Image 1 (cartoon, rainbow, N blue to C red):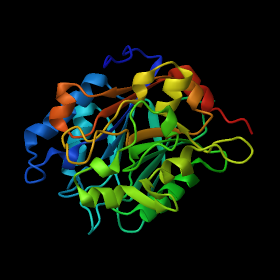
Image 2 (cartoon, rainbow, N blue to C red; image 1 turned 180 degrees about the vertical axis):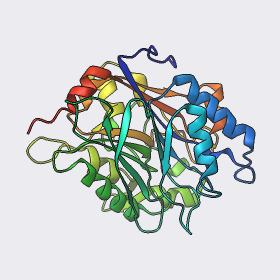
Image 3 (tube, one colour; image 1 turned 90 degrees about the vertical axis):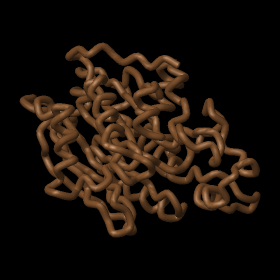
Image 4 (cartoon, helix red, strand yellow; image 1 turned 135 degrees about the horizontal axis):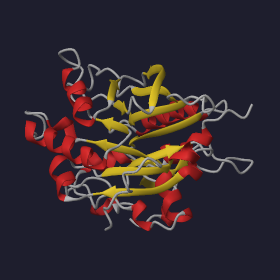
Length: 313
């Protein structure tokens, strides 16, 4: 697999999306502080301008100290959604304060699971590119397909009303265009974990099938031939000739839940998709040691990205 990164020059905007298992903190799934530091170093290697983070476990405690430690390591400003009584594993977004200004900040609660972290940015010191960019880091419900459907419909609104949006996270579900995928959907009869089978499948008249509903909501072609969001992995594979963009992302550790699947995905509104240069699924040793999820890296052409943020109305 090609795990190289785009040149670290000024004509590229780099976006990372990563679920670091329980933030690598002690007492959580065998994590320890070294795992969290390893994740920081892995991210810093790729010099992202935007990071969409999931499982910032306990980073909201002690004045968000752990969150801001990560921001300082990466040279980025950091914000997060709150943890909840049901899950202390919130989502967050980090961004380059030299490139972006914070325009607004929203949190969308969805049924008590992981609230969506939704900052809105503008390009700094650019009098033409004044259209806001809506970002979202999300972590769809791990245990309940109807909740994932509700969460996906909430995310859908971020791309409405002529907005430009870039979102990413752990979907805990599968791509709906599975015929195009390089990794087959799970054979549920071969999965050893019965709880996982129940959580990741839905019942249809034809029997139990993989849950692809969230991706269908976000990225399917609607009546009239348009899409609300573009799956960047699918776009990179089919439009840019980068088949590795469809590589599996999780689980990189467990074997009792079937082969790894492409459950971590980034999406953008159609106006931003032509700016994409590449999307890479990174599973080198530093990533695998830090988390059970791959690190996803998208590189956008800076000028095309900028043009998408120039209002046309």
